[in-house]
Image 1: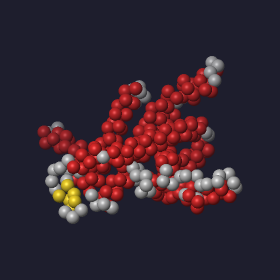
Image 2: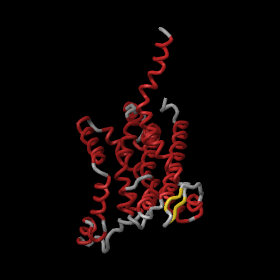
Image 3: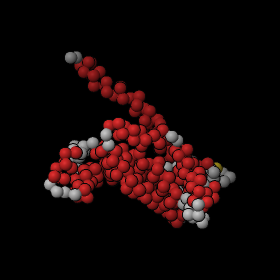
Image 4: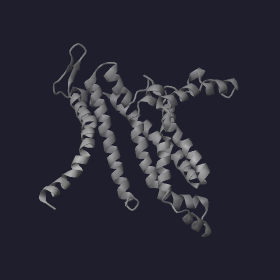
Length: 291
């Protein structure tokens, strides 16, 4: 093979990946870089955005307790959502894995079906069910005398956690279900033949093997919940802001783009550090599973 042919062969992978790489740079990296640069600009109600390097926005976020409370609320809701999806999604995935082929396909479609519906539509469904005096469930329970006042759902963290858990549940179920595919059913039968009870089998055989799936699903659910916008905006409204809704308000309501860019950048950096750190710990703890 000639030198020219070897050179063309060496360049072939770069030529094949160049369109995707250009799209990645143009659609993701450049807008992110522009957002980070925008966070260091100044803004005034009458002067607008000034392209100067200034740390005023970052100083305001670091010193104002409002932003600390808002970010803590964001991550608290994301953690509670992750915990709720893990507690409900892991048993759901285990039951799905033990079903026969026909029923497994049907319930897998039931689990994946909500992903085909808009997040806004699903969140509005929760608002219609529990939204104050006019919510269908609240009206039914009050008419039956079960409750004397509507169950507080709208503009509460509990409502946001429930709605987000419903939206994120398929990601947790699929992650655990994928981990269960590696589990040999004969191991459970062998444990039962040796006298192990159901609780012992779950605790000492099933849980250690599906834990990587649970943790992987937790990372996905946490990152998506912390950066979610539609569900917190509908359920939380303007009373209960999280980082995503605050950045939206700064960009489109107050028009303070530099401050909104600083909030968005800080949220992105925090999520990247959490996700990367969690991945490192999971791969180190369960190195055999990822080989």
